[in-house]
Every structure is written in structure tokens, then in C-alpha cells.
Length: 408
Image 1 (spheres, rainbow, N blue to C red):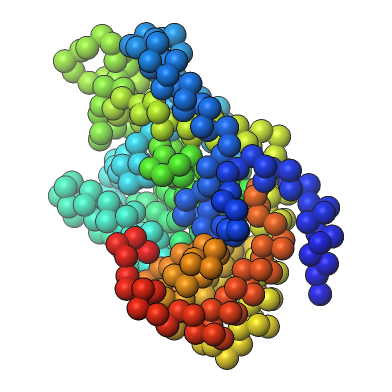
Image 2 (spheres, rainbow, N blue to C red; image 1 turned 90 degrees about the horizontal axis):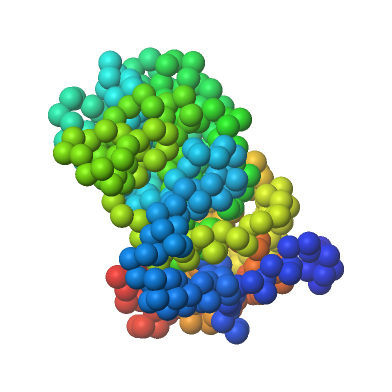
């Protein structure tokens, strides 16, 4: 048994909860999909809108260094993912950044045609790879295998190994270091999607020698809906490729207005269009929460929160058809817990109506994200109790919960 009150009382991360706006009476277990609003963001947005934009107008690009936001935000993210300064930039969306790094990687391995990924990868990554392969018309093949078959599928035919470190559905975690090492042994390059890793668990891109990485800013980084994404390129690759998306912000001299594209030196060549200053400013402020935080402590709390939830659900909800999909071994999972669940969509809607917010992923998965900066150990127990009530009392069996909305 866990002494939940004692765990919360001794929690070194507990004071961070006050830095987030969390609605009264809500247990928020969906930070793996959209992080909550950091309290400091409202003042930052007001200042950017009223003072910087409102008073400075176009002078804001220089007076407030709007033009440098992608690099400053990128460096803040870099500190969370083990990337050196100048190797990460915040820009665009995860999907567009995937096209940038995948086209670069394929260009660096022009003699190979296979893009290897797995069936647990997030679909947008697969869609973008399919689209890019079709546009290049160079006979590239997107080869998909089951997540546990990736290691054996890496061979000399592979140009790029393209994976999401943590499976968005099950929470299963790939061994980034081992898979990158295996890929390099056969001459392949690696692209890692860190959408469910950055801010959730320790990541060390330098130690793993990953070639490229991408990720979003709106999940564990709490940058708000549609927040800018980020892109990482290992230093030795940076100046060895010409970007396929050659926008003016990635030009060596954007304000020379040359008629011919010349890529910038370093990570700036991964920029394309004008930075989105309002949303970039939100992400910039949200990232300040991480100052001085130990990712080891974050990981330890994440695992314990999830362990408590798993134990409580398994003891309370036996006989209701739940199947744990998330690995119980700590080193094999990210920061979420997923169950397959009959009538999973309706079950989740009933939970949300009761103030316990997780989400649903087709065909039958209910997902719960454990974000240690603002969750309490008591939340794990109360969420399990709520799931028990919904199942035993069949609270889900109502027309309003069975009708699917556009966003699940």
C-alpha cells in the first residue's frame, strides 16, 4: 500500500503546481495531448500584444528581438533533450519539420531507398513520409514493421530509421540509444520524433548520437494549442545538405533579398517562413517553468504516478474488460498509461463529464497522461476511483457519451 498523503507532502515538485492554471474540481490527465495553461503566459501575451506589437509596431522585430525567438526557444528546448546550444530551432509544425529532416537524411543517403518505421509511429509522420517519397519520385519505400521487430529489420538497405520514441497509443518506449547504434552500424541515419518524450522523460540526443529529431511544443512543454514545433540536427550534418523547404528565413541573408537561395550556416537553415511571434512568445514563457528542474526527478515521479494508477485500476476495475497496453517495466514506457476498453470512447466521455480528463484513441484505447509538474499522487488514486464508478455504474451508457465528436 502507498501512503499517498506522505508522498504528496514530500514531493519536491509539488510547488510547481501553482505555476499552472488548473480548473477547480478537474484531474487533468491529458497533458500528453495538450498541456495546461502556465499562469505566467497570460501576462506575457498581454505584454506582447499591447506593448510590443501595440506600441512598437514593426520596430518590435529589432526592439524586442522577435527575429531571435526561434533560436532562443530552441535553446531552451535543447537543454531538455540533451542537445547543445545552436542545434535546435523552434519553427513550424512537427509535420513540416519531419519533411525537412527526412529530405535532408535521404539526400545524405542517396544510394539507399528504404525509410524504415513502425506501425506504432504517429500517422502524420507516416503520411508525410509517403507524400515526400511520392514527390521525390526516386523509388523510395516506406517500410513498416511491428514495434518489436524494428531491431531485426535494420539492414544495409535502410537509408533512414524514422521512429517516435514513445508510442502515442500504448506508451511503449523504444531504446533510442540501442536502435541508433544499430542503424549507424549498417550506415543508416536516424530521425526521432520526441513529441511524447520532450518534457516527459530524460532525453540525451548527444549521448545517443541521434542524427535528427523533431517534436511539438504543446504537449509536455505546455506551449498552448498549435504551439510551434522544434527541429534538431546533429552538428556534423548541419552544413552538409540543402534544405528542401528553402524559405527566406533559412537564407544566409534574409534581408539581402537575393533572387537565388543560399542556405544559412547551421541550424538556421531549418527555418522557412516568418516566425509566429504570439505563439512563439507563449512557448518561450512556458519553457521558463523548467529552469532548475531535474528531469531525473520528473521521471521518478512520472513512473510512480503511473504505477499507483495501474495498481489501483487493476484492483478496482477487474472484470470490466480492461487490458493494460502500457508496459509495466519502467524503462520500457513513457509517461502515459493506456488500456484497451470496450466502449472506450463513451467511457472516456463519462470520465470527462465527471472531471477526470484523459482521451481516446481508436479503435478502443483510453489514455491517461501523467505529467509530474502539476499532478498529485492523490490524483492517480482519485482517477482510478472515477474509472471504477464509470464502469461499475455504467455511467458511460448514455446517448450523449456514445456520439463521437470531431476531436477524440
